[in-house]
Length: 110
Image (cartoon, rainbow, N blue to C red; front, side, top):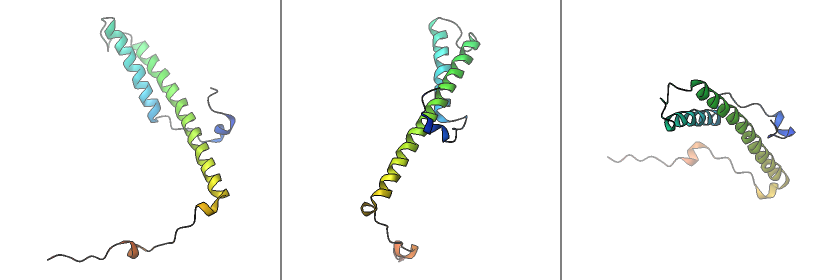
């Protein structure tokens, strides 16, 4: 599919069970069941091939949406890191603190 540009093809692929795939597969399956219910057929028992087909199509679309989402976030991260690298005066390094400097002293109440 041509949604992701060439730069995005170097990214690792998303997992097969990502949230977009599961969500859109569920939407496809529910739309097949809704179609059965509207046509006064038993929702779970009739048109199982259609339920499977729409769930598979939803899974496929969700997988490619996740690929495009990963590409978009990687591009934003790349641009942000490049900006930080080019403008170090805007992002000074923070001083290191020990854990004892962060935690307030403990005084038990008795």
